[in-house]
Amino acid sequence: MGSSPNSKPKIVRGSAGYVLEDVPHLSDYIPELPAYSNPLQDHPAYSVVKQYFVHIDDSVPQKIIANKDSPRGTHFRRAGPRQRVYFEPDEVQAAIVTCGGLCPGLNTVIRELVCGLYHMYGVKKILGISGGYKGFYAHNTIPLTPKTVNDIHKRGGTILGSSRGGHDTTKIVDSIQDRGINQVYIIGGDGTQRGAYRIFEEIRKRGLKVAVVGIPKTIDNDIPVIDKSFGFDTAVEEAQRAINAAHVEAESVENGIGVVKLMGRYSGFIAMYATLASRDVDCCLIPETPFYLEGPGGLFEFAEKRLKENGHMVIVIAEGAGQELVSESIQAMQKQDASGNKLLQDVGLWISQKLKDYFANQKTMGITLKYIDPTYMIRAVPSNASDNVYCTLLAQSAVHGAMAGYTGFTSGLVHGRQTYIPFNRITEGQNTVVITDRMWARLLSSTNQPSFLMAKTVIEEKKEEEEEEEEEAAAASNQ
Ligand SMILES: Nc1ncnc2c1ncn2[C@@H]1O[C@H](COP(=O)(O)OP(=O)(O)OP(=O)(O)O)[C@@H](O)[C@H]1O
Ligand SMILES: O=P(O)(O)OC[C@H]1O[C@](O)(CO)[C@@H](O)[C@@H]1O
Ligand SMILES: [Mg+2]
Image 1 (cartoon, rainbow, N blue to C red):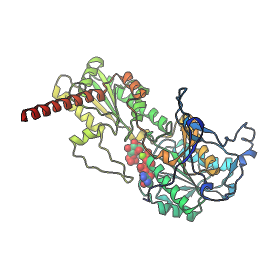
Image 2: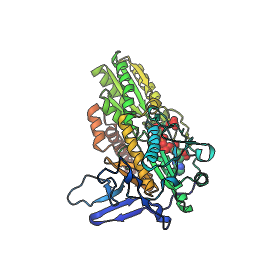
Image 3: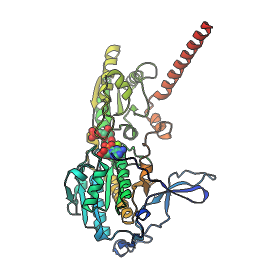
Image 4: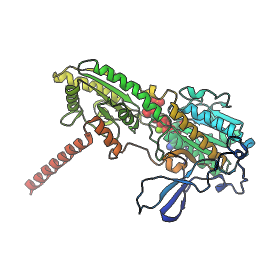
């Protein structure tokens, strides 16, 4: 992988604490770049739209809750078509690539990028890069037209293929340069956006007229700043089918327990939203909040109580939850995938076995436990209607931004508004469930499950106090 990105963020300050975290523009490093009238102004669909072009100074606030003394705060550039564009349709050679794991809606974004370029701006040369980043230098390209992508949104996966690993900045940019590509649309998660940032930096270093645009993808919803990533809604909806099945199985037997494992490596959003949506879930476990099994306030005690009350229970567990507990009991090897992501132990199988062992040893009640692992089923499906609309907006905004000469940005929704977010902001952290926020409190109130964190913290604090007392007593006796 190349050296770390080092361009300075473009910050514009205004009155009353207004800050615009702006996105780079090709004209920042290419002098006297010619601009043209946007061809949309003559387009029959758009020419009649009142104020179709976005005002050059429009921006969207990152925080919308304010009080009378708050500074105006951070803003992002509003997405949409500009009056002036920096590419002539004939000169554009666009490329589209999909990287990382699958996600509902990938094909819809590809379709809408192709149709947006073609129908809105008259761009005819569009290439698909097959097999993720390494496809730039290791595979052939696929020509894309509105006809070839016409019904791909009805299929799950990505028609271009995807991969992890294989990001070689120099080779990728060499390939972009050799092929004469001047607009690159990169669809992928946090890792992919980091890779896109490096590509942008290298392109800028070489002074190339190439717009690099990211479209955020991940069902885990772990990309910061944006409201949510496309495909997330579909994944939550699909997860309902697994939870329903677990519930039906659990309530049909005496002391039935249904365990459902959902995706979420570091962020428990899918598990949290699937739980909130279902109302059949008794306990939701996510990576952000530690839990424990034994003793007062532990999972076993809660399970016993729920079974006594209701005769059945459903547990939803995110794949990244409780990994430290699993590693304690299984000699875990620290393995990584090709992109450097931590490979996880199967916490669903582990917790199922632990529950079975506990009730077998207790001999107080016999349980029947069914473990459902719909992991790949929730991400391999085509996107639902609302995600399809979302994918269209993201793709069209990306095209408008690239045509307007912006680069080094991710197209994203902030408080329901389309924006252009600089790569440095999108790659600076990970979006996780904040367990001190109201949403997690809502879930706890809905499931009425124990807040393991609080109980655990109490136990740990108590332990620390006892240890301190012991140390003090030992020190005193040594004096
Ligand atoms: N820091 C980085 N710099 C450059 N490239 C990276 C970086 N991290 C990841 N990549 C590349 O980005 C691609 C996708 O990364 P990764 O497998 O982590 O998936 P992702 O984009 O995070 O999506 P998801 O996690 O949702 O599946 C891979 O080809 C990987 O080599
Ligand atoms: O098995 P794969 O393809 O590496 O993908 C698994 C990972 O991809 C994701 O769906 C997205 O990062 C994670 O939730 C999951 O851990
Ligand atoms: Mg990722």
